[in-house]
Image (cartoon, rainbow, N blue to C red; front, side):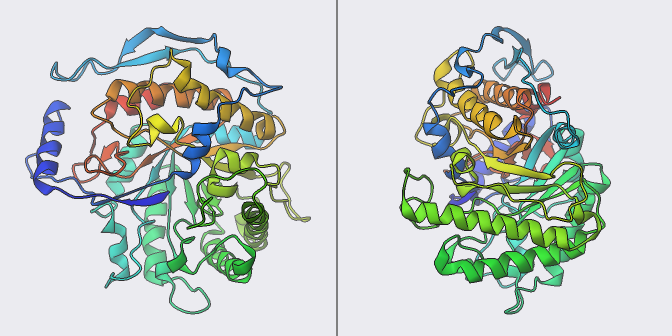
Length: 460
């Protein structure tokens, strides 16, 4: 996800939080405020999604979906007062596509629906943080608690992604991670594992210039390899006895930060072609490092992205899935493709785009159909699971019905192709950034219960 700055207006945030509390019947006696001053989102997965409009050849023609019936709906907010417009969850009947009957796809099915703990451990400030532990609250405004994790799980989220930036918690030239930071991340991982959730742990915002972490081009190859190897050596050692509920993700949205083709790429561009090859090599290094560490890491599920972690990055003809090592003991590969897709971009993430989405209109659903169909044909059919680690739709002038329809359709379509998806919750509800929050962390309740219900309706 790409960091975006937002303005904090405390008085407006107070009024909004209290208004939402009254409208949802979750009034609080204490004073609350919107706990976000900076939002971060990604144009990566979005620009590709916005241009993914060509009809998939040789696969299901999703643009002619006959199984979708938007005319039959069910009321999702009957418990709310009449102060809010009636919101309905569309009744969908997606035709399930053939999925390989392997333990890897059974694993993805068990992951069901997920959420990313955005703007939290991934936050960074490379110039002014006096205490590294303050990074956790720099963007989201509040420390994570065990109750927050329990609330996500109780709502139906079976998987939680914990994005982590490590570069601003490195204590020496050997890329040794601060023990205090490692312990704090471990605490939250343990809360989720103890509650029975699947957890995805990654390397997140360590790709920008100040980070001096990884940068996927030949000029930074040695630096990138050292960084990827050392971070994953430490994480692999720390977690090697954890069971399959813990999943490792190699990198977040690897790309040429600052390049003219940072977020999209034309066919044949030499710089991007080089970067794709570097990403392939870094993904392989990640797999080799984790597998060599022993314990349960020998068969742990691993997620590997393409350029930008976008669908187009994974679909690039030069993207290569890493190989399992020669001494791998699993019956099938436990390597999964990681993609992010805020699709259709104009609705889901573009603040200047449309606020309209209707499942009966193909100008919105076709983009979703096409990118998932392509991933299905390239990976799922051939035995490789796909995890959509980030998706969501920003609030645009309270377009709740549209976001509910989007959430239901997106998840239903993903599940029909044997994929799982995770909503990016950045605890953001106001300001001029991307408001993707569902759960209000300071208040301890879901503001957008209708969207959560829509997500849960089709996650089986």
